[in-house]
Length: 290
Image (cartoon, rainbow, N blue to C red; front, side, top):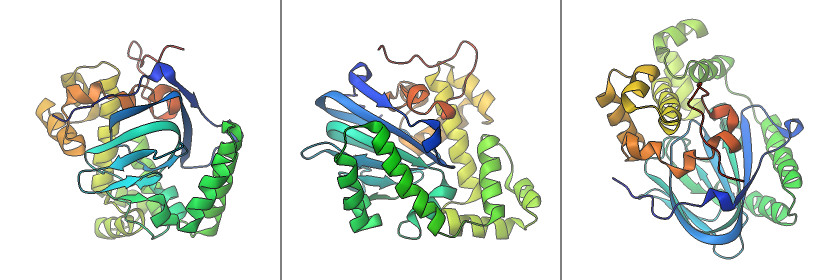
């Protein structure tokens, strides 16, 4: 089982979220400021989005990646990256989650969305440096969110959207928590299964079946973090049995369900990403102490 190393003490981390007027469809943002910069080593849990980690720390910042691919400083993390870790001296970081439909527009064809970890400068070129400079020039999270919203909004407007059928299939996969069959989704789109899979894969970098597995895993991971037993989570998330859940969790993270339940990256999801956290009576996540 992978070790979490030294996870962050969330009681010493300030978390900021943008006001509603700055939110964009398919885009979520959160800002993190460590009150006293410290070295951390943290295992990150797969999420059904492409993640931009923009390092605003002074000095060397952090390193993020998998055993096969690491990037220092600001990085783009694709879908289903595997055993993903972030470590280093962390001061400030802007994290942006892009649903695959939004990521296809924001990133274009400059990176493989499924499983890749790439330095942001390799994806955006000189634009990455300019964006980082603008973000570092202010310490106000409201201003930083406004800058990021402007940059992302222009990219969303400049790129051709994905097929309406592909966007619909993604949204149905997300809202159903990955429990709809591909055949049924193809019928809804009015396409053959083969055509839907091909177009979905070409535009979002992942097949509909793998997307459903990722969404279902994300829901299960949050239920585990909320304190449900693996057996209950398996039943509620649509897995055949507890062994099936264990295999999926191991494949996505390299961890056991018990380890995922204690993952420090999930401990603040109800604060930083409240829309992604499944709410069940008696099973809310406990936020960090103020």
